[in-house]
Length: 202
Picture 1 (cartoon, rainbow, N blue to C red):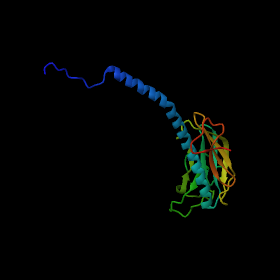
Picture 2 (tube, one colour):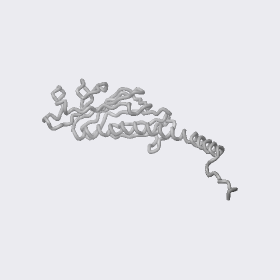
Picture 3 (spheres, one colour):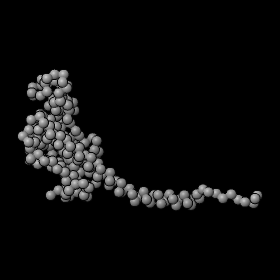
């Protein structure tokens, strides 16, 4: 029994190096796919935010029986937009009590003044800032210029408009608001790649 040698159950240095090399190769092959996925995910996230806020503006116009405006400044990056009952609200204002800030009136029940008459008499506690910018969407640019989309209280029809959002890798999604108030998202024909879940723009 004294002559028996205990066998090692660990890995040899060669085996560890081979395992490491295989792992590096697999990671190198997977990295472009992961980057592509993240690029698409960031673009979709930004686009869905814009889409949902436009839908909200249309719903608010019908529910409040008054025009609701969406003011957009989309000239690359950064980009910003605001929703308001105020015509041509100022998207540079970052506080609800700012001069002509993009706000909606939400009655907090401490007064009976639930409608902004436009003369500054509305309770500032009833004003909710509705300004959104590209800060949460790093790398996503938006084009379309400076313009306003107005949703009418009459069945939510609109003045129409288009916003193009582009990812760092050149993928592009387009948000279009039609004259009847319909809001659609599609991927642009000149986009570098199709985006799953969306149709190609016609």
